[in-house]
Structures are given as structure tokens and as C-alpha cells.
Image 1 (cartoon, rainbow, N blue to C red):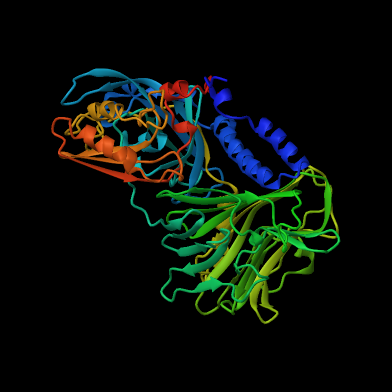
Image 2: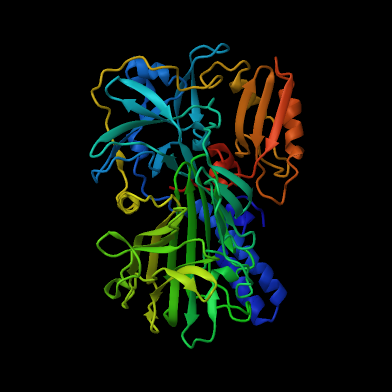
Length: 608
């Protein structure tokens, strides 16, 4: 059989599943395990090709040419070809200061850009937006002065679908109570470089086992399974929250959920029993760090019992300069089944770091002391503070809901100051008393965990304010340019070398890199540009600096490609040195391919 397209060069997941059934029926368990691995890899590829990126709040159809902007603004944004307007509105009557906003946006994947440079004057070039994270820039419009000012932003989760490139845009605006703000999102600049925005957000570690730090805290995630293991405060005395001891055989964490006890009370299934994360995604950036993990919880004697009944998906999110982090959780039933109880929010702290308990009932008012009987199952914030140090840790329960579940959902889990001589905890038994879950039912939650001190005079008021603003975020939509008079803007959007002013022509560098191919693909032009291996390119004097990736970690020897790239670029006029570094963040995927590489690989029509 001649292999001429994707269908003949790979095997469909359905084909692998059929082979897996045959291997199992014939007792070929080693072959079955290998096929199961291949099924998982095939699903990962299908996800790249087929996963729905969602409906963008700022769609590509809202894109306009930068040349249509008033002249002072167009000159300020010189080098970029397109812009989209984002309108923000404060809905609650509470001023927001640096509040994180995360929007799904899409931009055109191709278009025309006018290049002015010292090397080639007034060139109209057809370009592809190959990396939105590198090209996107965000500016706030000051309607009073008629000027634009760049603000830090981050793009993650890029997906290519047809003629559009999707991505999540994160930024941290400030908006007065009941007021609105206008932002311009710029894209379409082939000379743009990966922006560097200095913030207090830092990440150390690899994979999901990270230490995430901002100006308020350091969270340490388990190197084994990614659970939140320790939390260190950044105040002078550096309070550290941890859970000591042996746990139940697994490494102890301060965040113990999610888990459930089987219907016959025979055993408990926990994500903290994972030997490693079965599936995970990590997003690292200057404004936002996210660690997502998903799979089925494990038995204490895994793999003796491996029920595939409750699918659990948990994400931790940290932002720059914010005194809280978020946790999104989802528990989805893929089969009809019953259990004894489940927990979806449990935190344990060894020692006695706090002296007093805090809680919030359905009225949204924070209180101290024991939870009243009538509010035991209707708690929307729980936590602790120390009356002398004022250190506090408070869970703000922003969303806790069930879909398709006929039983009662308990918003429970009062804070306990003395847990069996161990320390302090709360534990939300969200469903109990032997509930039945039909297939397709879902429990979901969204929590914020606040680490700021509990102020003596207005601590309750500040916590309530966080709870309200996080439950009612800034409202965003595609907007229109106001009629404000445009004036000259300070500075410019482009860094040196991003607007046709590179000391060595970037166009020439990109074209030279197209001569460098991955020759493990023998019969096609698999050049490093069209294959999407180049993450960043910048020129400093006579030095070209490139950041590249490899298609997967099974091929870590990037010098195999980097050395031919370096030799080719040294042949260009004025290039005296070439520095090439490797990155694995983010991982390469089919979304990085150009249209030419997509066609050369025989992948068929672009999805979308």
C-alpha cells in the first residue's frame, strides 16, 4: 500500500480499538498494553485536529486594518496589520484594580501587512499569523487624552481552525465602578518578538510539579501527582501551611479533594492516589500560570480495581500580583452508578497556625465562630485566621452546582479548629447518603483561596468584596472605536526591530531558515519555519537569537537542526553570530503548522 495521505500514514483510533479487542480476546496482554498506549497517542492527535476551541468573545470578523485607524494611532502601532476592539464594563458598582480577565479571541490567520524597513521599502507581504502569543499586543485607549498605551498581556492555548487562529487572552485591567474601558488588540506582525513583561509571577520546576510564586505566596505542587502540597506566605515571618505524616500511603497534601467512597464502603477512590498525572496541561506566562490534571481516581490497590465511572478534571490558576489562586473542579459521571459519599473540597493543615474560624452563609456575610445549624449545608466561604498575626486562609466558593443529578448537593464543610489533634481542616461532603448518579450528570465548582491578612478593622468587608467581584467579573465584548479625537501617543508599540527597523533583515532570516529542513521527513519540504519549530527570532546588532522547539521529547537533541540553521544564517550579510536555544513550553502541535506544511504532510482540509 502506498502511503500518500494522513489516513494511510497513520491508523485511526477506531482501527486501534479494534486491534485492541482482538489482542485482549487472544490473551496478548503485552500487545494490548502497547495498543492502549497508541490509542491514547491517537486521541491526543485527534484532539489537536478536531477539538472545538469554543465561541470567541472577540471574533476574527471584528478585525480591522490598522491603516484605517486615525493617523496618530496607526503610526504608533506601525508594524502591525490588524486590530480588534475590546469593550469592558464594570457591572457591580465596585471599582476593580488589576482584575484578571481571560477572553477567548480569534484573529485572521492570514492577510496583508505593509512593511517599511531600511532594507526593503514599502513592501506588501502576504503573511500568516503563525504564533499569536508572539504577535499579539494590547493597548488601552484613554478617551480623555486620545492616546494609546500598551498594557501587559499573555496568550495561551492557541488553536488553528481554517482561516482563524484562536487563543486565550489574559490581561489585568483596572476599571472604575460602573465605568467602561476600551482596549485594542493588535495582531499580524511577522517581525514581532515574544514580549517580555516583568511581573512578580515566577515558576520553577518541570511538568506539573511546580513551585508558583507571586508577591503574596508560594504554592508547591506535588512532584508525584500535582496536588497542592505546601503554601508559604510572603509576609515577613513566612507562615508555611502543610500536612505532615504519612497520609494514607500517598504523599500528604493540604488539598485532599477530589475523592469518593464506594457504595459498599469497600474502598475510597482518590486522585491523590495517582502515581503520576495520567493527563495534564501546563500554561506558563508572566500574568497567568495554570496546571490542569484529569483522569479517573485510583483505588488504594490500583490497578486491581480500575472502575471508569467518575471523570475528574481539576485546574489550579495563579495570577500576577493577586492575593488568591483559583481552583476549577469538575466531576462527570460516565456511567450510571451509586456511591456512599463524595468530597470536592477538603483542606488539611498540620499544626495550629490559626486561632479562629470564619464562614459565610447564603446571605454573603462573613462571620466568625461556630457555624449556625441552619447554615451547615449552605456555606459559601470557609477559613481561618490568627488573631495576633492576622494571617488567614479563606476559601471563597464562587460556583458549586450540579447538572443532571437528581439528589441533594450540599454546600457544606464547616471549618474545624482542632481535627483529632492533627491541626485544622474543612471537608465538603457535597453528595452523601448513598446517592445515585445517572450517566452524564456533572458536579462543578469554582473556588478562590485568599491568603491576604484578615484586617482588624475591615477584614470581613474586604473578604466579602473579593467574593462579590470574583462572582461578577468584568464584562467584555467586541466593541467599536469611540469618537475620541486621536492624538500622538508616547513612544510606540514596537520594540526595536519589530517595525521594519531590524539591523539585519528579518525577512531575509526567515527566508534563509526555510532552507533548513527536518530531513527525518524524507520526501517533502519540511522546513523549520513551515513546521512551526521556530518560537522566537530577534536580532541584536550582528547577532541573531532564535528560540526553537522540537516536535516531541523523544527527540531532545535539537542541535541536529540548530547547527544547520546556524551555518545557513552565518552566510547572510552582516550576521556574525547565531545563538539558538531550545524550549518545550508550549509543546509543539499540529496548530503550529503553516498551510504549506499542512498540505505537504497530507493532512487534508484544514479543520474549521
